[in-house]
Image 1 (spheres, rainbow, N blue to C red):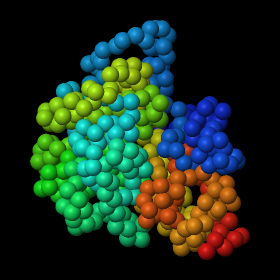
Image 2 (image 1 turned 135 degrees about the horizontal axis):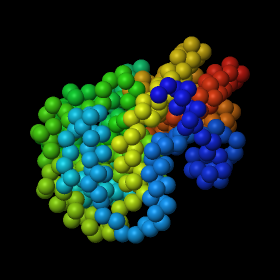
Image 3 (image 1 turned 45 degrees about the vertical axis):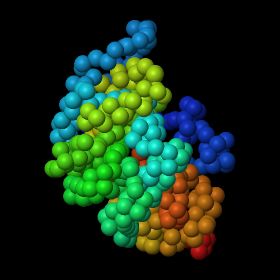
Image 4 (image 1 turned 135 degrees about the vertical axis):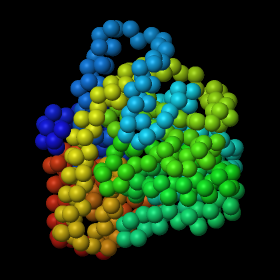
Length: 399
């Protein structure tokens, strides 16, 4: 599917639809109206037609009672994972949650005790921080190395942090949000080897696995060369929600290959989660996995076009701005520090440019002066973002 076909068919206006991204800017997060919303990680694109058709069919049946999980769901999900990422899954490995943030909270409790240390690679999605701190664990923040916008793992520091703090669990992110990295087989193996040597459990959040812009292939923790070496300490999180814009249908996967790990997880989760499965979430997911390849193709072309426009136009107009290479996700991380005082980023991007974004310090204390921008949107907002940023920097000195 071409970019033009995809946008003509699936681009929608979300204003006035109770959208968190669009309709809460003034009253909740930013306390001011008139901003272009380029923050929350969802999209201005409808789900594939087949997803909507499947949902309509189920809704028209009219009964939403207790439901058992059906075999064709696993068939569609497993085929998607095998075809795209060479992942071999088994039904007994799969648990479900209403979302991956909820899953993180459960997993922190299942595999650690209060006061235990949990390590994350910062800058990283802020609910990772919250899942640790809210559950009264000791948060260890191992900062990624930043070489002119290209982020990488500091393996020596990671091992040192794990040993010094007796870390029990690592929350890993691949593709990494917001650094934009798709980790290589070697990087994943080296990270996991450190964890194994020090008896650290691993939770790998792979929710953005399908949002790959083609610069580097995505490799799951479940398909790296040495995967069998780490199965006894590994949990992998996936969901159709990010790929197909289905977040509020509340259906995500918790993949636990090891039986003892599953027993440990179930022992905890049975005390806090007695809800039923998300019927409509599963109907939507099966249809998406079964019929959504062409839709995803159009989506990825759109995201890549939007990202490359921002990267190239900013480089041409304001070369001091550093846009990190975006290998995965639709959320480029942009370093404004050479042109904007970190203490004035809100004044610049929100007050003067009138754009709502995620601020770098939400992801790491060391990233004040960065912004994370959502490019899974209408191209007119991409153009407006670049024009406002470049013109405003000419009109006013923010240093």
